[in-house]
Length: 251
Image (cartoon, rainbow, N blue to C red; front, side, top):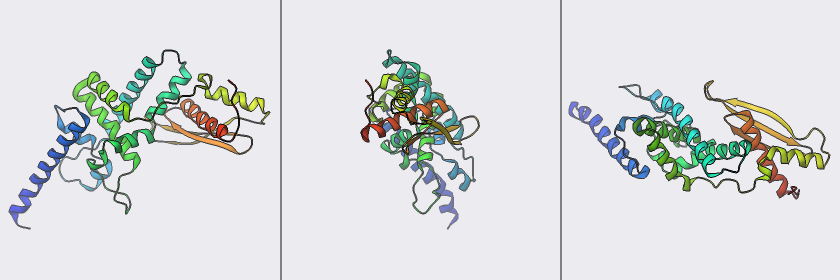
């Protein structure tokens, strides 16, 4: 490679990246005042680990902030739009909106995988759902830093149509209670039984996977930011499984 080509290549890469970020801002319908924030939000730690030259900033700090921002916006939305729900069902709906699968699916619907800088960990050449989950949270963190609460809230509202619908059935607003009631009605021994399967994530942002099981071998798992929310989610899933198996819930 000639010296001229070596000098020009980084400039071309930078110009292409600027074009990419402008395209994504049109998709997000938000224009950053500081585009470096968006670039950082879309830089996975795996990329930084394999591209140490220059000042490369990954998205972990913005993801930390964005996780809290998204949780706040989800909680505010659920609280304001469901004035008749109790704390338990509000928690269920927030975890439904903020769980990893929902966030990764949202990121893919926005084609964030086409803009994310990452190094694939396998031969597939694709980024993982966890990297996409981190990226969408980091984008919220970046928007918060760039435009504050109002900008982040507007972005959240624009994303809502692309998120899975909230559960329609309430089960008295208490899936754990409904599951307990069903177990008592059928005299199931030691049911329901909740078990902590694993704890993942950093100390400042742990994720808990809880399993709930009932007599007969029926069980379900759910992951959330608190054990209680994970139990509620697991109970909801198990209730759906039991209903599909022919068990009737009391109304």
